[in-house]
Length: 174
Image 1 (cartoon, one colour):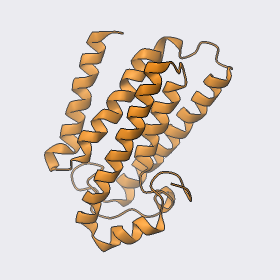
Image 2 (tube, one colour):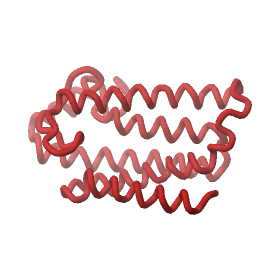
Image 3 (cartoon, rainbow, N blue to C red):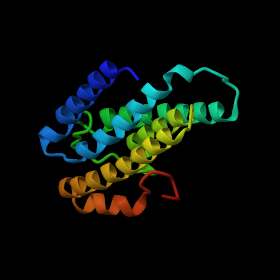
């Protein structure tokens, strides 16, 4: 593994977490750091085999998850920017977005990070990668749970009702 890339990426992820969340006392950014970091390490471990044996079952599963990740991430981000009326950065919305993909799940951006990590993990699912995939899953769950408390503090009963109407990550299931 390229340790220079690891150090540089880790510093970038820490700064991202600080700039977009933690400095605004939105502490979900701490848990999210671990989700981003686990995905980043998975990419560093697996990038050499990204296109080897592209039609194997694991590669096909990987690509499906990566495409779903891109779709949910882009869709969720654009909706927050367009309908959430962010006042300083895209995640600091002033309006609770409940339409489109947010009408089914509360955390499409976190689902996207989970799908990204899982897709990269499937490129070469050895024990270290499986552990990093589990760290990603746990970190995403804690990130969403912490953020939900922040959203209840911000939007109150409107968010509580929204939580009853939608699922956390997977429509109609979880």
